[in-house]
Length: 225
Image (tube, rainbow, N blue to C red; front, side, top):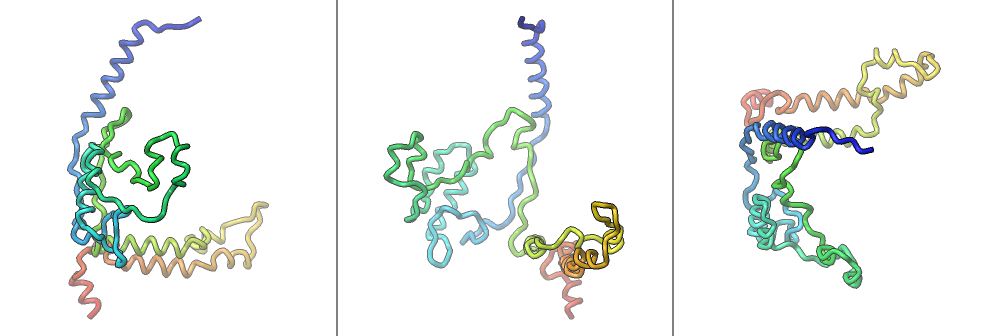
């Protein structure tokens, strides 16, 4: 037996319309870029474009065309981009005939959904109604602080969780059997405590974490003097 709720289709339409009204009521904010897109585009995404032996773009117009392509939902704009066509193939050229998808027959890897940000969704707010702060500008104290954090995380990968705990908390740890840890065990798991403290102190002294972003901060200059 199949159950049909009376006026279900009308109720579904009403619910969808209410969801649409709610999801489109959010104003679209201004998406702010940073100041990095400057020639020769050292700090921008240029993967897939042709580079010289010095690591710089062979043709800076390639980046301008690429950036223009990401600013529209029209994928045809990417036709103006000159991607790098190097000697490294992603598929066997002899296997092209066996590939079902025309895009897969290209021997070169393409960019992954470069215009995905322009897609419309049917759940939640429109992607255009969401934003995030611009990436830290190259040369800023915030940028330097993020790099320092990333490197410090890499250095601390082998540290135990207890290296971030106080000696009092470690002292309260017990074994699975409920027994108090031995002095030797406690020493082993706190062996990196000093390294963790030094790392935290170093990061805490960076300008960004002190609330100062200017590279020529007078307080820093006075401290150096």
